[in-house]
Length: 105
Image (spheres, rainbow, N blue to C red):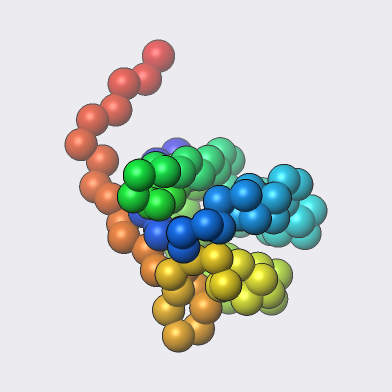
């Protein structure tokens, strides 16, 4: 299992709407994550900076990257673009993080 951490940025005042749109997440998007080998995926908000810290456990980098090409992912990006900092294609602006420490069972 590959552990991924990354940061995105939420626009001020969008916290409640961001949470609402994720609860529940679209079933089709959840199914896509599972089909492409995503086993765990969590997003946390740092309210002081509006940074979203995301953590995902994936089976394969290529499959993880392929999610971005799915129609449901593109629809999701468009649906969320008004709440976060995004790239020209509406994908979230992401800063990849390097794992510095991990403790397992």
